[in-house]
Length: 73
Image (cartoon, rainbow, N blue to C red; front, side, top):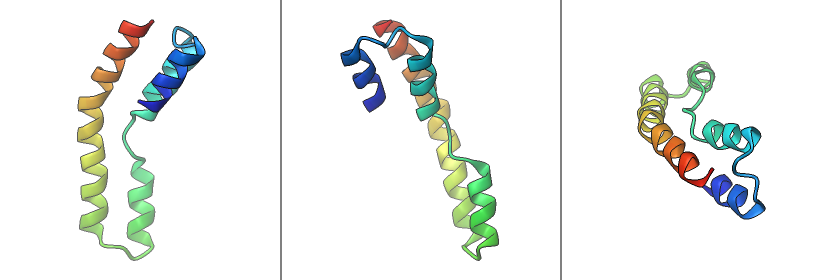
């Protein structure tokens, strides 16, 4: 959301690079981070839950971010 505000203030929110940056900011956490956490000896259930929650939140927030970009640009 901060990147969207900065892009709007900078006047670059209609540029494809800004749109890609904002959408990338809303992407879910890396699955690889969960694998690394488990291999580092952290609780597998907690690592799996964190990745799953991030994915579910991304499914909800990415369309919202896309809609905001459509309104701004």
